[in-house]
Amino acid sequence: MTTGDDATQRVHWSFWLIAVLALIWNAMGGVNFIMQMSPETLAAMPPSHRAIAESRPLWASGAFAVGVFGGVVGCILLLLRKKTATPVFILSLVAIMATMIHAYLLSGAPVDFSPFEIVLAVLMPIVVAGFLVWYSARADKNAWLT
Image 1 (tube, rainbow, N blue to C red):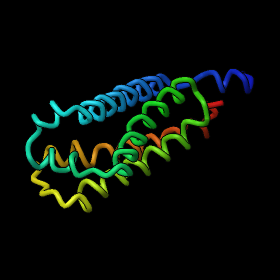
Image 2: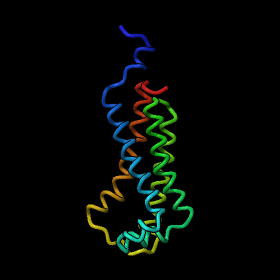
Image 3: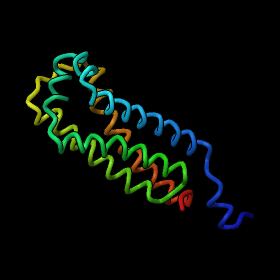
Image 4: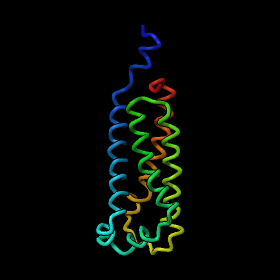
């Protein structure tokens, strides 16, 4: 028989795998953000990609930063098994959606992406962020977070 403390200490191995993979994913988003701040990187982008990045207003750049770095912080909190991971992931998801609204609806840039780019650049960030909100709430319900 396990005590309540034992139950909160024991997490399924998949928790660690998901948290580490999510941290890697969000860290890659952070690298992408930093690279898009470089004029050299922007110059090497295809015209449609460059137009979106160059037309991004301050609020959309801020949302982009909050989305990716919020995801990184949320993953670190998840790895530390902190309940605050869930609200940080919610903030990240909202920021990602704001970024996507600008990039694909408000930027006025011609969006000429391949199906692969649409899945990778548009759908995956939203799906992963939504999953992390759900998963962190589930981990909290399972008493894996403190």
